Image (cartoon, rainbow, N blue to C red; front, top):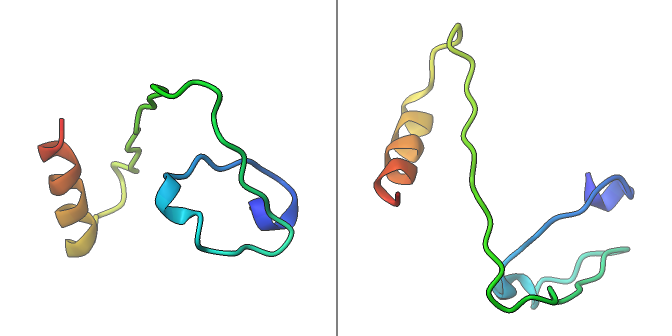
Length: 62
């Protein structure tokens, strides 16, 4: 979406070497900034095996 001019992404510094057309990187003003990660799924739809593994990995990092 950001490449279409429709959004903002917060990325780690490791993304700096990746050049994105029409995008620009701005440093956050707060050096200790933190964020939350939310995981949202549809209970009426079965998750694939890779999705289940990814969720398991995410939950281990709590």
